[in-house]
Image (cartoon, rainbow, N blue to C red; front, side, top):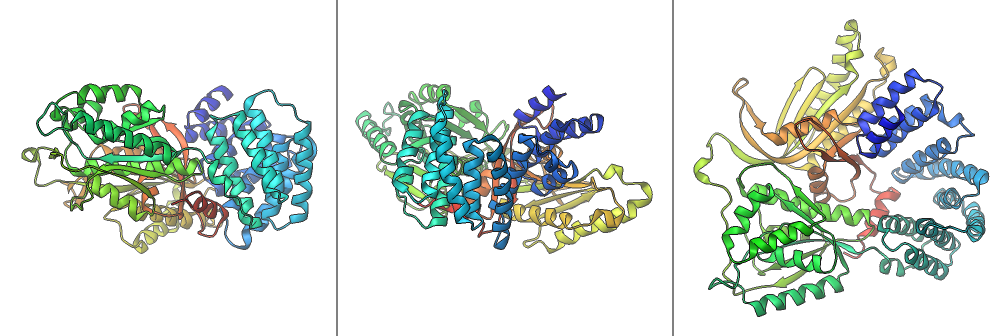
Length: 606
């Protein structure tokens, strides 16, 4: 059983792992491993209230001899503190600091020690923070790590301890040494930089060197389609070579790392080749499957674009086909893929504690189209993010017309929609005599929330214990999901006589769908494979949390500021007949919480 749970957990299938943990806990009530892992599933999925409930229900805080359980409790309190608002921050930080402090007293390990020291600072106890920081420095001096990662964390803890004591110079030297020990561990570097930024903010220090030690910046790229030199109106070899040099200079000057975009003939391929030549990660985001995209946006431009495209495809770190459609039906598909690519770049930058940049090869001219390079430029600019423009003019551009207007059905329209499926998990355990109570006290409350949502959902439907809602944008859908979750969390199930195991789970997805009339109900509704994906995501959601797809999370990254956080859960199997879906946990955070302030600091360059 443990092996299966770990497999599900490591593969990001947290809903299944959590269910298996609960089943095993019922079968083996004295085995604390299953209880610990169940709460860990909830913490990782972002269901912090549910995690707190299970942590108390399983009495894990009483396992004082179990370091893992103690660390789990401290981690839960730390997560709550970093997302709390106002006076709650210090109270929760003090509890988490105390738990880490006790672990440090038992083990002497620098990891719980430095967490305790920083959390005491967040709680307003500078004296205890300084005392622990000095003890951590002593613990680090006595450690003799063998592995590169262990050496990194020892030096990173030293850097944090020095900064807590106000010695920015020593902190800089320690962090530089840490990164030198494990240069490729950029996620670890980002975690450390984010923690140090919080210390800098709390102590009102100056640490401009932190920016210089950030990981390379993720980039979104886009540009015009143009023909090869073999055509009369194509780009000449000398001019293409000049563009390549300009791109290489931009990559170096802007410290560009992972690159996200499409692979159409012309500008896209030039940027992709520049990324590959430098050894950068290349993430290709396509509106349709590869073969369909090549036929629509590469092959018609002639020359050697197809061969060059295929070479880039073979070197790409990842290829995201955001739909399985057999044709590039509309500009909405292109816009959808661009929004996902931009959002993935921005989310990657957030994960790496740095700021993203957009690299464009285009004319400096406006466009009224709702998709394409000019649209991408406007979306990025409106988000206040850095842009690098590589001007190109005098070329005969190729303007593809997506889709075949002759096959469109006038009764259906291709639109982009954000969709939510909502379900009350455990409703089958409600006794038949309590069904009226369930409907009046739970479903009616959820319906009342839906009535107050502003702007109202474009589509709304219910069945039994479930709801389906659709919106223009992901920001509207995210706010609706959080309002529904909060309303359910406020219910006192015990007072209502309902099972305390009931929990709300919400799945969200964003994509191009067909909007048309429902033949049975004679009202407008949504059809298509993206609707099916949204429904399957809800089934894979951990009770008490909101899970959304990568397209939803990416679009939200471009649509909102620090109002919501989306944290990667993993690739999850949602259906035997569908590909696995990259899943994210979504939750709202207060604008003045430490997590939001540190998130804003990571984009300070922009």
